[in-house]
Amino acid sequence: MMLKVAIIGLGDISNIHLPAIQQNENAQLVAICDIVKHVSNKVKKVPFYSDYQVMMDEVDIDCVHICLPHHLHYPATKAAVDRGIHVLLEKPLAHSKVDSQAIVALEEQHPEVKIAVCLQNRLNETVEELATIVNSGKYGNITGVKGIVTWHRPRSYYEAKPWRGKMETAGGGVMINQSIHTLDLMQWIGGKIETIRGSVDRLLDYGFDVEDTATAHIKYANGATGLFFATVSNAQNSSVEFQVLLEKAKLTIKDSILTIANEEGKKVRLLEDRKLAGSKFYYGASHSKLINNFYNQILQDGHDYIHAKEGYVSMEMIDLINRSSENKQIMKMGVLQ
Image (tube, rainbow, N blue to C red; front, side, top):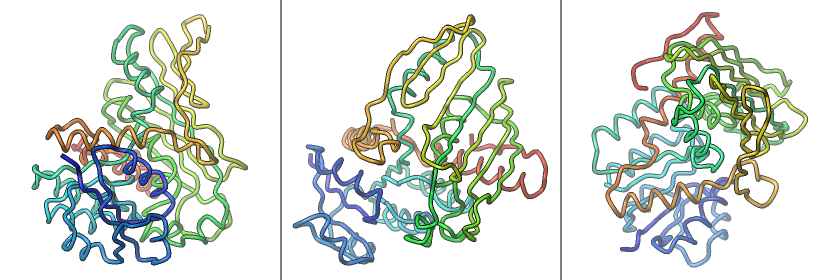
């Protein structure tokens, strides 16, 4: 069976989705959609729509990729699910906790429709190997987790697409846009979170209302603690650092390389991620892996993909960090973990 695939939103991230769709032998791109007409030139000989509702009504679609600004994720997902169309949703789940909960509810109410979230860094080779080592128990329990993101975004980044700088459309800044993958890994690897104490700030003088810097201290149910720090006020895009402390070893991913240090501190290089070519190499190369797997799950009616419910956890973390910063209090995680 050939999957009939469409894509809604032809902005920057679609440049990673489109090749993955076109290179998959089980998929056929049958329609594209964007409100900006000239981007239709990205793909030749594929029907172009400026209204996704019309597209979904007129074209026979099995799966739609939603690559829209955050505040449009829920309405587009609902439109697809209501028509029985499977959804591959770019991160984040939505722009708010409320819309995120609504997408989780859609998933629960329509088990026949699959909703996958693009948290593709879980599929990086370094992360997969790190998870295997942690879960093996060979080096003892987790005692600490650290996630550091120090990137750069110029004022022009927000001016080029004004929705990025507004809470009502983006739902946040550095946490929801640049470091949600790191937050996701902190809960996926670290385990169930009990409490978060966080702080957000705007260190840059851009005048937008989304945060450019965030920090958090996390307490896990297993007794471990976590440190999260993210900013786009750095002079350049530096490598993300993700580190897990175990009782008898330290695992670190930096510069897309996984290393392990034993109790004596001796560091051994284990493996390196595949990289995307070009300036946006720091996206990682696992989008196509995630997309191909999701197509397989649709074809086989499987469930091995990142569900909306899983994508919700990092959204709640962001919500709690914001509320903790505002109230100067430790916040408790909810029950959806």
